[in-house]
Length: 391
Image 1 (cartoon, rainbow, N blue to C red):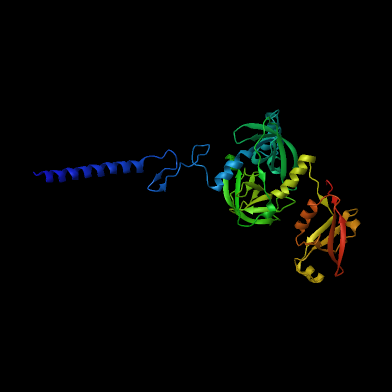
Image 2: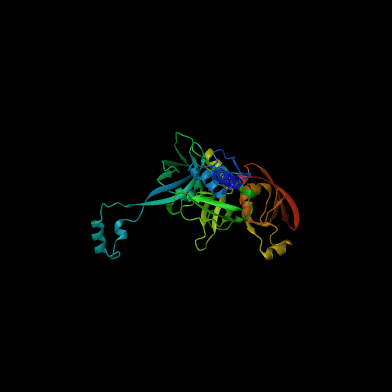
């Protein structure tokens, strides 16, 4: 073989070796793990590993996950024990009714047996102050002889009632603690819109710290028959027995309501007390141990179509005064039976429950201006709000 031919073969072999080595180098550069998070491979940044949460997984981007992690530590499980007088054992187990012979026999047989019964209940609550104040429903702790509060870290403490308000079904209890507790952030329930996200956290059927998600179905629900003062938020977020007293939250993790009740015959119909109503109640309970409300001393009713026609107004253009109580703020101001209240401080009122809430929330002694219709003539009456009697 000539020298020129050998030279060509050697040259091709060297080129092949060079390309093979270059291929190995490029492959290694493309597949080598990045240690800085900013290495380039073919001009494309190699992303750094995602941040990790305390559990070791990726940090949550889902807002529901963030709300759960933020609020769950401030939601508690409340269990109560009520010991009350019940029927005697002989009254429960008399198989022959009230026959004197058998009645005496069973009375002697069961003599000395306990005549008290023990009941337990379960609900939820939210920590509103780091010193140990907890807001819940009144019906959760009603008539309780013992209250046990279980925290998210499974620690337990005995609860003591600070104050209750059956008219709104709210209560505040306190636990003793030597360390600051996590607290919830309170939102603004007056700013709610139908269709917003709603998140409920509680202990349904004893299942600790269950989170459910839905939307705000309606606001201002009344005549539900749960409490004297009703202005409920309606939601389709699942609320079950044990959720009572737990928070209803917005997507930012702020409390917008206190979960209270469901419609047992329907699905996806739950009710929560607006946090703005709850805020005033709990402040009164903490400061005074009771709730003080404004009072006029009138009986009121909605207009019927016939009454509206007789007044010459629309069916929803006012509230009729059907009673004025003696020595009441209303009597002192000159309100009379048959007056039609059209507005309060310039705001039209159409629903008796709306007027009840306005007066109940008013500061004691405050002067309120009513526009009324009397003898088909409009008049202005100023009333100084009194304090609702205890009875």
